[in-house]
Length: 198
Image (cartoon, helix red, strand yellow):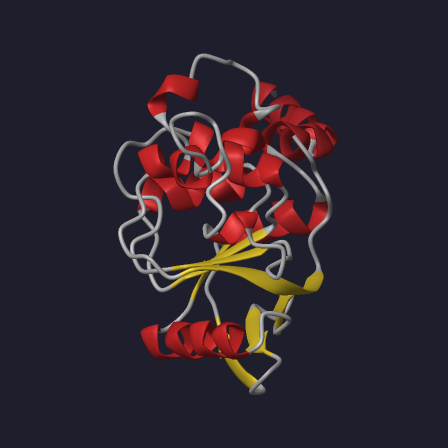
């Protein structure tokens, strides 16, 4: 798993203006046999990217060369359905660092955070305007400022603040997973245990 420190990201976007995208659409169940995170990106949205013969479906957005970037912009209720973490593995392994939507399924949202992908919840109005901007110009860029908890549509200059758990924000900004965080506080934990033993 990539543990890149997260600060401010400015990039173009991949638009996926569909609501209720579930985890089986993100990564189909038949690809869940692996137990490591590597290689899941090639099966991200597999049944939308390829037909049954394995041929590329040209009009799907991930196969369209005019859309690039590490920011996925998706419709409302992203990551619903089963709680499989493999869906977040696929998103991260493909190279996305941010997913923007007006609503995330809670478990999937936490799975993204645990895999160093930032889920950004915006208003439905902001999301619609962002889709419109990308439709008008596929090179439209978005700035996601994690320290300030702010997202900006650079085409219009419109910004919104977003919420994030303080602990997860710290971990993302410092490239720490839960184990790394515990190890970084080893001395403080041992000091506390020592005091409790007195």
